[in-house]
Length: 378
Ligand SMILES: *Cc1c(COP(=O)(O)O)cnc(C)c1O
Image 1 (cartoon, rainbow, N blue to C red):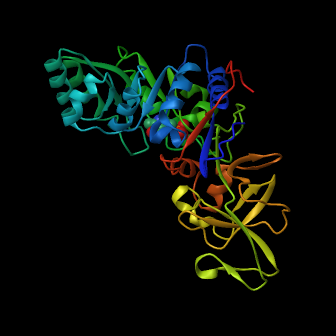
Image 2 (image 1 turned 90 degrees about the vertical axis):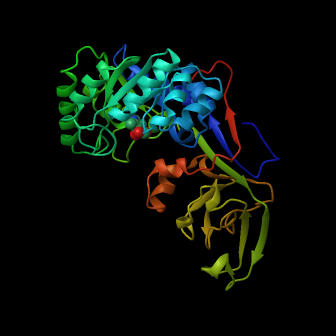
């Protein structure tokens, strides 16, 4: 493992684990099923460019992002693969979308018309995908309104309707009814347009648990990064965690029984104690809700967080961990020896989900991309 003594806070991204996950997930699909790697929100905090390069090399067919800015970052980084923008774009962004060879999601006539106009001006064909709202009641066109929109798209010049797609509300829940109902509604609509050859609906949860939702392509996000979509999810595929969040001890000192630590002195030592300061707090993705209840890993052991987590500093109790020194590596998310703290464990304490814990990791944190020669799963 690479040592970077000049860094005080950093992320390590295990590209071999990422490659392993893509291959393990692909192996779970019927041969010929296409694989979209979802790299929105800086690849769920893992770093959009490096992750995109690695997953494409590992066999992903295309990329999915939420907004135009994310797609542009990938193009500027030299990624030529097909990119679907899954969220809304503005009609005024039509020309850029076409020039960058991006695929927009269309749910209304206004954007369709803007893309057709821009396509004519640029003598290029705008490839679009239509998102069907089959029951999530979020972004999409309802099955009732979709036929009119799709038929309208067919009348427009310089537009190619490449795909119909949908998104599940509850594929990570034990109750399978909503998923089955949504799939049924989506396929009923899709049967009206047999000339549209690409249908997709499955996120990670559906890809893992509902083979009948795989259709022509799956869109995998969270599981690329080694996470199961929910705690109850059956572990259908062996996945490896990709990300570690690390810092190092910058001060070790003793306090007397009765003394408190951090703002508000919300924790008071019940015995003479040794505490270590780490230069990482809620501004770096360690939720403030972990004040007085979270733990970190130090010298292979769990050290409890004492007092409140500050913006860029936190204090941990090392009274029971001998020989802690300034410079010692501290793991916030990840493994040290036989101990592991997962994003899921942090999420539970912070009353949220692992998706939020990783996507809140600041883009400005240095990311060290680790991989061995050959890129074989370790
Ligand atoms: C985020 C997203 C996905 C990926 O979801 P995961 O649960 O992370 O696999 C797939 N499709 C759409 C439309 C999304 O917004």
